[in-house]
Image (cartoon, rainbow, N blue to C red):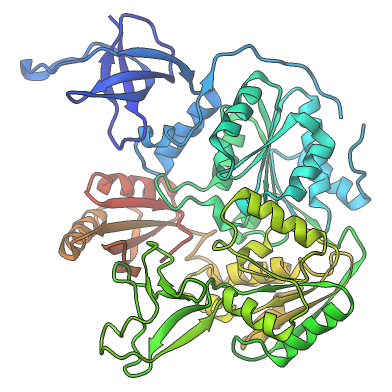
Length: 620
């Protein structure tokens, strides 16, 4: 009888052996008995020989209970196997992030699209460059018309009878982009991201498997759909950190797109106005300068601490008087990021996390933005019992409140994760802003992503200096990219103004209009110790008992010292030492060889309470 190696979906177990009376194709989903009463879904990894029992010791091999009509496509299987290898994770955990396929009759009808956007000479050259390279980067200024190039590339792929995938940071999946894609591709396109209801996802999936939907525009999870004939992957805003998963498996969707493109001969096009240095250094790129619409931008430096200064207020007033709109960015949600005891100067922290509690005036509460714990804001100081508190580091809610006092006739809205909790709220707010029902939009990093509104003539950027000083080798790159992306929302057509409130104006003056020079200078600073010249691996250890976490870290360090061609460049408490009642430690390794890091990770992968983070981007 056939024996099969199977991986339990969503469980961090090594593959298990089962038998079946029937022949089962590879990567089919089956139901298996696990333990005394449990029945689990598993994926068949392949047929194998009857086990050779050593020393006469036999173990019971159970029978597969059911063969379902679901399976993973060859595209999915290739991608899953690579994730398990490169990100050092059990393959059953990996397959659990994929959406399986049903066996249905496909519609292979070829599409034709006459009504595509015309390309300028510069855009045509970028289009030809992308067409002639397996993987390429379009390094195009904000407003240079990258979307028009993507649309023409997608149309060419669909007309050739193949599928296309358009990846974007999730919050950029706006009604604006949906309308633009539907204008050209009609019913052949569907959106896929976390805010879509399960019933709607089922409808999309059925049409996609049948072949009625040929273009998926989505967040990183769209990469794991059951593609059968994928010809093109576009990764827009490729620099964005949201492509990196912050839980097992800690993959980067951008990097996976590049891998699967090379593995299966799928064309990959990356795009950004502020590309990551790693992508810029490693991928052939086309520099697309200028803007599609006639526009110019004026930068105003407000050299002071974070506050609604006279400079900011006067510039907002100027926009309102001219019947234009303004956006105000700052990185902090709530009214204030933390409160401090006036008596002993102790910051009031979450009892379950080593982070400050943020003050939310609307609910009269202090909230932890990591574990979600909240408490009444007038609790006494945990250290001295004092009752007088002072709020520090202003957030979006407080800015909205202060702007409403300064401009009582203006319509002001907030755009952050506290406010935008559903897809409907996102669509409603952005439509209101597009229809000029909102004069000032105040928000966090959401403001930087993919919004194109021609009546915005002012972008105000506040609270950015702290991000520039983070202990992170990418802090300069991430901060400059964020500032340039937010600045790019103003003056999309016409004259735009950007007020940048900072005490480090020289850094921004040097680079904010010359990202090319920044990439060159940053490359010199990083060589040879940091990416793209070296690879990093972060190992995170967490446990509710501090001693246990510390001991596991020590064991891991001793094992890793034996790994060849790998350097331990740091170990100890993590940047945030305590989250959700767990103590956290980390080990950071460096090597010129990704294989050396993978081998090192495999040496410690079976230690308890340990998580592997290959190519880390977050060091908290």
